[in-house]
Length: 153
Image (tube, rainbow, N blue to C red; front, side, top):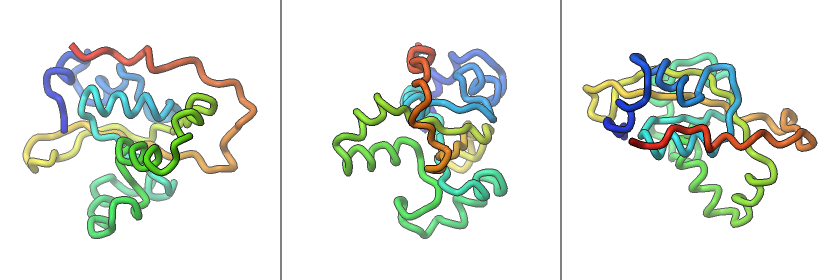
């Protein structure tokens, strides 16, 4: 759920501008931990897709409606926070793996959707999990990006 005071403190007038200031710009890749930190600090819903055609070809609302009756961990889309919680609970070494090989996700879209109260609009981000054949385990680790996240006011 959106944290209004923290969100209001981010420079910008539109969700796209504010999310851009936080480093979530469509077409860029970011460490999934940065997404989790933004989700936690600002209450922005950040959705992780496992299927490229859904991430790029259907609006978020449509995908969420289509899979509404499917258990959370069986859907092709999940909140970043839920994905990380599930993975940490099921793989104690996951945190260390993220330190050695940061999981970089592609930001696909940013925008606004009806919030849980079905009245107030809330910002959202969709991102795409890289495919295994796209992971470059030999690449130099990205520079620490977590420090770039604006702190809560």
